[in-house]
Image 1 (cartoon, rainbow, N blue to C red):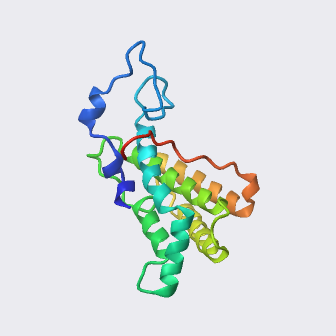
Image 2 (cartoon, rainbow, N blue to C red):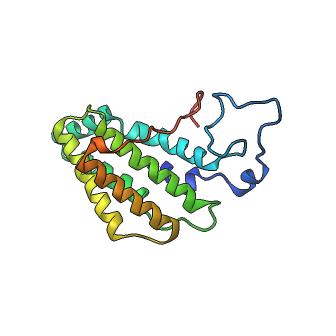
Image 3 (cartoon, helix red, strand yellow):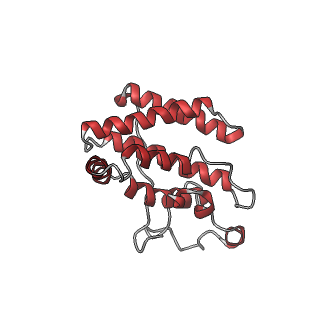
Length: 191
């Protein structure tokens, strides 16, 4: 779960300073990270893809069902609530990102949004056992409440407010919310 922290996802300032757009005649291919900044390097998309790699594996419906079963058989094993609580502690509920991390707050917010999207997509998958879905739904409800009670400042406050509203809307009426797809991860060896 530490791989969802800005300290892990952010590229060093020295690397960011030397990145350049592709040269004329060299178009982006599927080997590139996605971008929403035209030809300029998109550090947000890099952070989102990295977070999606972890969140996609961690919040896979089959894995979450197995976590619930393993905890049911052996209470010493972490349960769904413990896994989700730690996930949210490492992302949305974490302490401020150190100023030494280049773009740290922005990178962390990008990862946080991937976690919310992955959680809602997990609920929407229809692949969870009902009792497991109830645990995930409760964790999402508690996150929305925490976000409302802990608004933060600046861009963090904006994201927390919007995330709380998105979660509440989804839990109230899933069909009323168009969920975002998980960020694309370029093919090849893990990033």
